[in-house]
Length: 357
Image 1 (cartoon, rainbow, N blue to C red):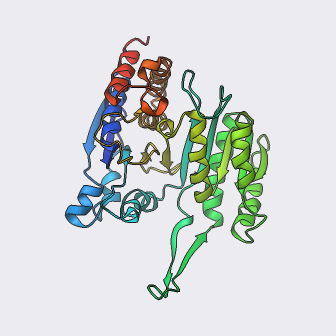
Image 2 (tube, helix red, strand yellow; image 1 turned 60 degrees about the horizontal axis):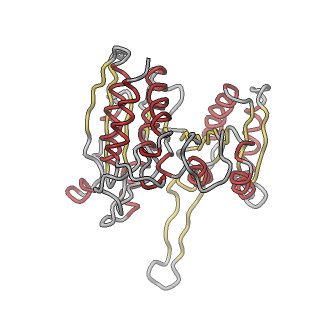
Image 3 (tube, rainbow, N blue to C red; image 1 turned 90 degrees about the vertical axis):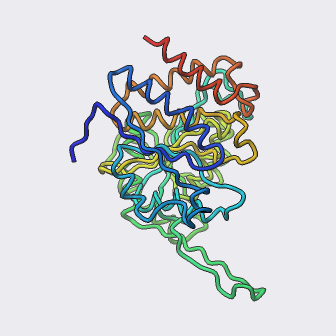
């Protein structure tokens, strides 16, 4: 199918909690960034999430993957609400979409913006990316419960690691490292786990032979957790399994100021499949509806979306406007120690974009 490159078709899933609030702040920024280049944004809203689950018993329709394939990309807000079991929504929506679309890689950039306070000292200049395998590992969904209700319940969670999946994540990580510093850290736990992570070590080394200009270092996950706090500027691109990538990327978000600063992209490199771009802060039901959520993670996810669609100038406009906005503490939301509202930040970013040449 030939797509109209002058129009970006965007499926928008606001989801639950603060998801609708941060998405509402982000879509106008994406639209303004595109219109500055003479392009147009066409939005299709999708009411998938907790409310739909309560109405219909499913967070998304059976043909959800086919619906989103009609769009160039998907902007996703958040999933989760207190009155619905968490696994019903996570597996019934975001993990389900990742697996149905075979979105092989989750990209988690972490950047420390000037003017943004962090809980970690000396984070100036931190700029790293975690490449997380996105469909297997401990999140493959293999396992079950035996002897349920007997008092001797047995939970079995099977981690699945396959050569094909490791290879495609590795190629993405090596390619990214080659375009950046030429340094890649593989994060595993092969000293204690006998099968899956030794396979990761072996396969990634083999893939690395195709990238002779990239220096590969293998680090155990517990050592990486410490290094991430003690020496974050020693890191550039990290490659990790689904579970380790999930944990380390949330830890790394602290280096940028917290989860409200953490964007992500779920993608299948080299395929004509829409990526899903989402902030990773979750639905935050404790502040939902109060208008105080930090929209920056969602806005930066929007910038990643534009980059991947080839609208690099529009993506740069958003990032630069966000950076300009964050330099002023009046535009810091509560998670950054300020008093700004979601709408305040959204308005400030739009004004900063208007002032760009």
